[in-house]
Length: 274
Image 1 (cartoon, rainbow, N blue to C red):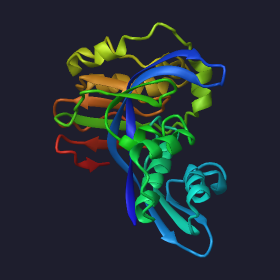
Image 2 (cartoon, rainbow, N blue to C red):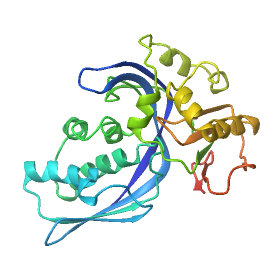
Image 3 (tube, one colour):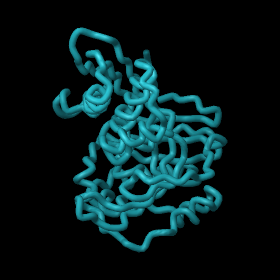
Image 4 (tube, rainbow, N blue to C red):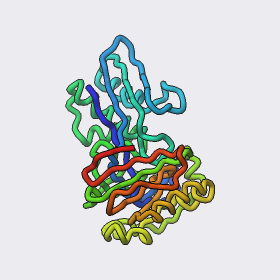
């Protein structure tokens, strides 16, 4: 059985405070993005994680997909499996690819082995894997608070726009990004800002990670400036970076980018090309 795990972008991200458990309270809007990894689970004599596509840093046995499988195996006596992951979502990009893979694996195993887990039960498992994972169980636009795992539905639909995602040849680790950010306990602006027209977001919707990351990696700031120069209604870094996206009224072909950057185009019919 095969599943397609999509990425997400953050539309605004406010870091409110550091918590005693080491996480941070934040406010953000998660929006699903039609850029996909491909997952397949096959019954086998022993459990193995078999990646392809983009290289995945770290040891294979630390992958979140294996951790997701192990959570369900312990609770439901699952048989051994081979987990195939073809990686297309850029890593270290603020797109939640690893979290998406883990969450979609939970859903895939639930379906493949007829476990009968409800959505709230799957969300509970996903929360144990990482802050972003729970979002991908429901996988629809939400206003997120807490550590990014408390959700409120938001009426947001960008399907009539053209989206462009640019991934510079830079990897930003989450811990590195948090080391650059200055928490601001005054939140509450994002929900009101996101209700405004997209053309009004530029001065109202902010990502608190941009200041520190742009100072450290001015190339990422230049990508955002380029998107605006070429007609974006709104442009921002996603999550803790390094990817930057732009929202356009019309189809655009970006010029002036470093040839080593990855560029994904999603048109208003939700077709993807890169």
